[in-house]
Image 1: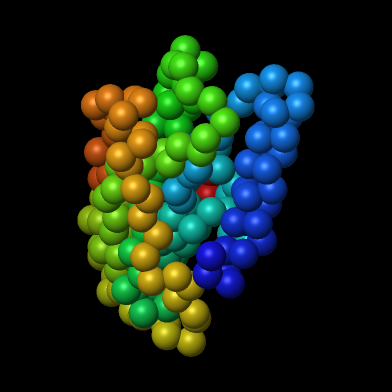
Image 2: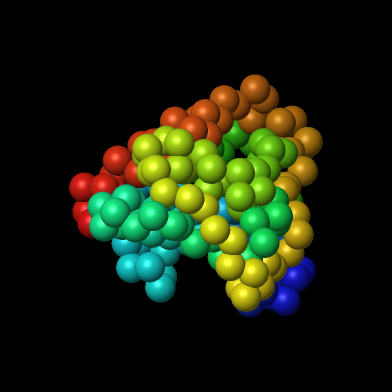
Length: 180
C-alpha cells in the first residue's frame, strides 16, 4: 500500500488475519468487505476528521456561502479515486447477510473512478458554485490510482446498481448544507 494509506491498510489486513483465525479455530464466519472512499450523509462535519469527498463538499459549500471566488483543490488533481455512497454501502451490507460467502475479502467496487479534479468539477456543478477551481500542488497526492477490481463483487452481488455519482454528491451536499 501507498505510505499514505499504510495505517488503514495494515489494520484491514490484520482484521482479515483475525477473521481467518476465528474461522479456522472456532468455525466463526464473517463477511469481509474492502471499501473504497465512502461518502454521504452521517459523516463527520469536522473538516479535520471528515473523509475526503465529504470534506471537499463541505469546504466548497462554505466557499459558496462566504462568496469566496476561488476553491482550492489539494494536490495536482490527478489522482483517481473510487467513491461509494453510504446508502450503497448499507444496501450491500444488508444483502451480504443473506448471501452465502465468507472469510475471503470482497471489494465493494464498481471499477469506476474519478480524478480529484473531476470530482471537484462535478461537485461544483451539482452545488452551483460559481468560483474558480485552483490546484494547490504543495499538498501531496497520495497514491495515483485507487480503484478496486469488481469481478468478485459482481460474481456475488450480480448487477448491483450503484447510485449515480452526481446524484449521490447532490444528496450529500444537501445534507451538509443544512449543517454548516
